[in-house]
Length: 237
Length: 108
Image (cartoon, rainbow over all chains, first blue to last red; front, side):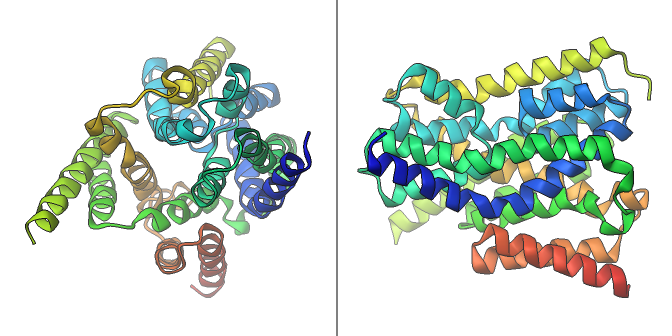
């Protein structure tokens, strides 16, 4: 490992560390919710290690509690993770030349936090060597992802000890609202976000998961149409 | 709850493989090739199109209050969004939301 590569890794660790404050409670909550829903500790850990995507894990557990058919559980939980196809697409110009196993490992660790940190750094320093970019990415994952496993286990084993007054149930909405808000950078993004929320609420009576699929599809289309309309407006002026 | 181990592991393994394939998709299979513009345009809206629809029912009808709208949680959600938009900082928004939640839970 060259010294710049090592420096990139350590910088990633430093940038990723504050997210422990978010990931810890979130993972703890998943451990509590999953075991309370009737999953064993091994099954709960299976989710956090094999899937490693919090929102979709919550969605899957919630839908299983609602007795939704397995196909619907999978479709809805995977729909929640579709955003990661975009993460994957936007990392490709930076990491596309890395080896296939490295790209597979990056894909496994491509969660909201590691992606957001990495892409911000790549856009600041696009000319950095690929191995430094890779090292930075794994640096951000080094504190965040092991914490996800460990705190899921803590929640699964000691869930009952957590006082309900802590309102841990709201860690999930707050985390995701906090991730969305800085993304509302244009009228098109605001329109897409509002469409998504309104359609999901209006269709809440539909089978669980289906409303989210329809809401997301409608919102992406609305966002794209508003953006095209804005581009035409600015082309005319 | 009455869930068979087979059902649970089908979901875990299916979701694990599916999620990995989504994450691997472009990085793994597309490599350096370019995607059509309209696909990229739609994909750019994925996070703002999925997450609000996921969160909106949880904010309005929290399971912790049996689906009854809760002023403390609504205030916390508003504070999180407002701080996130103004500061463009995820962590500050989370801290603002959590503090608002704890303060309003103890007052309201």
